[in-house]
Image (cartoon, rainbow over all chains, first blue to last red; front, side):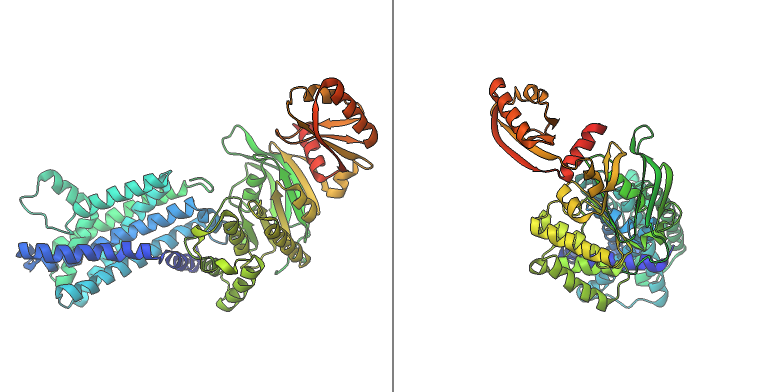
Length: 258
Length: 319
């Protein structure tokens, strides 16, 4: 596999996807969450305990929304494979000097790019709207690792869906359903407390976005606990499993067949 | 074009190629042919004849079930990437990126590793050649079917190649756009480009191809130069007869024609054809039969034997 080829495809993916629709999806929707929920719930909720400290709701929500961008980037990745299959570019690219592995790796690189761009923009928006404090070097490291794993996990999850579904309607319905489930059954918007129902807790703990949001949040406030490191490890394992599933399903995608 | 001079005089060599999608029925059933350097080789056939599957195998998109294939001297099943670096493929199905026409051309050149200055030059030239200048800023999904097809074909010329696969490249195009594309391909073959070309349009094949293969049900029924294929029809002419009104008696009437070989229409609404040595005698016989059988003739026409006659006759004979 030639990494340069995947890099070329990543550039192509970014160039053909930087349309207003994608940017709205990537930036505007999470910004609305951030601003509206941050201000509105910020007035209702005082302090939320996180690790060894406690923070206000705005500080809680900002890293959550940055983590949420990994799932949004994942949708872009799945959408790439789906639209390339649907509109013939998958077959066209595979008749060019690119291997299937290079194509797949190109999409994963694109997911990382969109994950980082989306999260970065959300951090900047947080700075502007939510009086955010400086992040330590270790915090930056944790955020980078966490965003990378999250982008890869969700990129592969939506790739797997794009490899399996047969219609545009099915792909859109599934992604909307999953994104709502993943976002709201995680610690992006609220913490898990003793009052959280047990059944929901299971959903929260299975969901990697919970761990990604927690680790990004720990990175933001520079209070890393052992729990955060365990969460990072769980995210890594879940990502490896999801990459394997995506590769398996992607290998079965036939040219000229949607 | 970088050219394949000195490497092989047959960019494509196929022997007893077979392909099955389901393990039971062969979409390509033991075909053999070769394409010479600088030649446009046409594959003619009805829908489902196996033309697209053949192109997919040769362009490394599908792995053959059996047989021997050499593309630019290499085996597609083991040298896929090396082959793909030197070929161009315009697939039959629509393919486009969700972007503007000019960006689509540029991005395609980019993924082929064409430098920025070269891309700019080629893009401008192709926008002119394919008459896309007026729609260069339009997004692909805002274009008509014919415009999309023009972009799809133009896009392939953003990079150099030694061998070009064109799977019905002119479908949905107006006559002028079609002629522009055919002329461009003709010019490129003078520089050594070899082309495998599939089409339903036999006039196109007659205009562009040096040799053709007529395919049906996965098999090649006939393959030669167009002149050689027409040789069997030397001195013959085609009388076309369009039946008007009730078609009921037509079949019975044409079964009684003795002065030439009758080929029934491919589909309803088309004329009957009679390939004959003596057009005068055939026309008189048909008019006489029409009167006695009470069949209404809408019009009658005499012309030279075309590739279409050869095609229909071959398909009818091989079916």
